[in-house]
Image 1: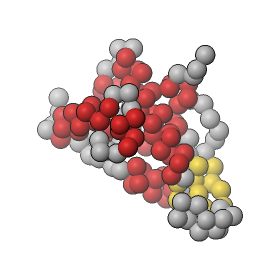
Image 2: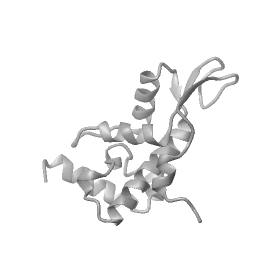
Image 3: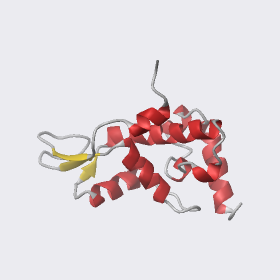
Length: 137
């Protein structure tokens, strides 16, 4: 049986920083790269205040800085962002109020390729951003 998104959110290795031995995603050899975890990405998303937005790139930069790294791995960080988003959507399907789930719409842009892959699609991200921009519900 396939793992649920929640199980994927809670699984995985510990976050760690690796020193690159060759160029990777624009970073030179010797750069320190954070390999985050799904929970670390989820925690970052939860820390973004209502009505504010960040980008995946900004999240990667913030996470790298917080972990004394030069970059955060763009591949795993994006995968973990999707896991956090889908886990939030799973929670909503089981009745969790939107106020209690990870606000992934504050980090995943509606125009991003990732938004199109989410089970909710880009419309939900746009709707949530608009609702938060107009003030408390």
